[in-house]
Image (cartoon, rainbow, N blue to C red):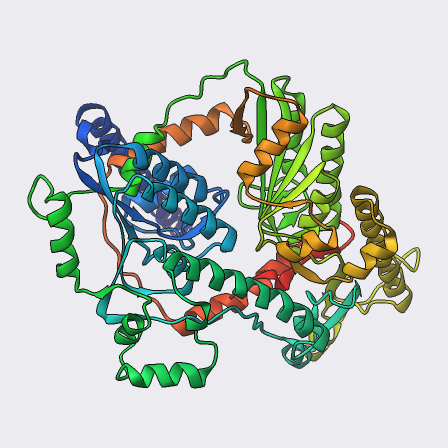
Length: 621
């Protein structure tokens, strides 16, 4: 018996030794890779790696979605992505980075031309596209040529391409304008088959955020409201592109019959269709484009390709990772509120009631900050978190610091809640805003569990005890939740009424959960003027009576440990070699991800009272 015990003990000791050795080996290998990367960074850095090539073309490769703030990413995860040559699942491009690069390149004598490579651009909203397009137009004032090249152009990609002097399309490529639509998925039948009980509480005829849960189709009220702002959005797209391209808006095809006629006239060739309708200037192969650009700016030093300076390289040149030197000059602070509004502290790319309020408080306590711009890009979320942020806006105003709201692509529902009490609201003509309505929603699974033979039972000291998603909801409790939603809606109307100088009845007439775009919202009194974040900064400075001032973005203060790891991995990731991985794309997989994303958003919501001011239908597709 003892021998058997000794044998078992030896086996487990041996297994643990192997596991421990494997663990140490794994982490030591990671350490060696990082260490080698750092040695290369220190001893073998090529000073020319981040220099602008003389007489080169700026190659503006925009890979990802245009955003006003990037989602937070762990430094180690970013290190692994870059060192292994992989991309983030949803890459992002900071709009102000693109603008800064174009502004500098316009005056840079080393840059002779601009080449737009838009194949990886996945959109971001008309306001952001318009901001980049304006920067391209400003670059053209230098009389340097601008080329847009591509195998295909999506609708969003073409918006920027239209501002180029020359648009070249691959002879096997194509483009097509689809307009804008909102076609969501509806889950009522699925939830019934799963025997899930949904409990929905809402106020607002047009508050359609919960329709995917309670219906199998879009209500007529939702169709009416969404058709209005989608038509306005599409009208702005057509007007902007037609003006940039110098063509008639009637050239856009809006019926299948009209598209079919033009397509047949082009011999069934998408590229020829684009050329004959003046969407592009020429059909050129990649080699023909390369030869033309080489003739313009020459070849690179190795004579292997066109003399180009990449967007990422130029960005590192004009935006080096150097510590910011604080000045005593008066400042206008910009606080970014981007993403769904959730309770508590959240990372960049999501709005946290506590974390965003903390950024506003940081600006309030900074004596050099004299005014604040709250830049919003949000469809809303938690009513409680929205109010926490609005209260901090009021504190700024009480401290004598004016606050201007700058609305980006979205500032709807909770996004409008946090904007309503600011001193002035500036929106883009295409900003999706309004959606002043409230809903509450949760699901219980007593029938699903009963079907599986699982039951919940017990006793409590009161009728309130034991509230759970595995038990039926008492009708009286449902009435309490509905009254809470109605009360929150009343509060929403009142705060907008007080802030905008409108009667509650006037607010209610444009509320009811209805969505508006900026050009309509200004007519309804929901916003004060149309403009950009730069216009908001100017307005903030005027209200604070500033003549000379700096602007800066308020960032969360990093701990010493976070700073160390950020710099540590930031150095290593630049120099460690990359491995290439194949990227697979599947329409079916993408649709599956879309379904999961919609359910994931609902699962994210964390308002303490389950009350939300959220505009789910505000997404443009």
